[in-house]
Amino acid sequence: MTWEEFQQIPVEPIAHVKEKFSIVIGNYLDISITASQYKGKQLCDLLNDIQALLDGKRKVKDRSWVRRELENIEGRQLLSYEELLDVCKQFHGKGYYVAEMLPLKKEMRLYTSYGIPLEERVIAFLDSSVFSSGKYGLAICESGIYWKNDWTLPTSRTYLAWWELAGREIGVHSKYAICLGGGLTINTPGAQQDAISLLNRLRILAEQAISLLAERAAAGSAQSAADHHQELQDHR
Image (cartoon, one colour):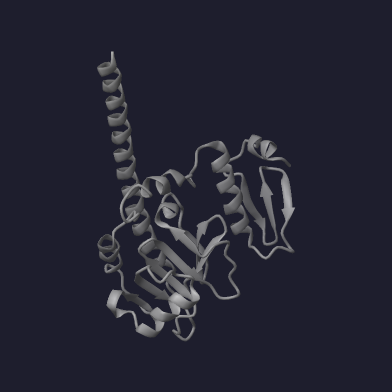
């Protein structure tokens, strides 16, 4: 099936789980996933995201323009440390650490094992390790979220910038994990709902910041057009 044929299927969402080891595309194409390392829901999330992108409806939005706009802003941060800290402080729970409450040993492990750059500040951390070692978990940082799963839970990525989190549907993946669409899963044993609530609050914060950025970009474009028009008038 080509992408053109895929796009012509008049069903939305385009994919759904039929049985434990099979998914259905449209109303007729039954695909076995017995040999796949991914679960049916993960594959369906990915296909449905692709459908949204092809249709231009873009529930999973192309926000590359946000990155370009941020490159023109000093600091290049969509959300401030203070904004993120205010949200993170509103949540509490076992294995959840905010700011100075994060033990130094766990913090050092984040930088060495999660791929977090040394210049990135960790704001909060949800430890999902069995023995609270910090080996697996979710880190809230200035530029976005980083996470590390155990070997039982595959994920297509382990980092999302704030502008990439915006527009995503965050939900329960299994008893011990949550999903962010597009094959992205995060281990959160015993803390699914807390993690979903936290990420949804941060997602809304990012979406509000993007809306403000869009307004500023539009205002800047309008001003540039007005300036250009005035220049033309002056040269006449």
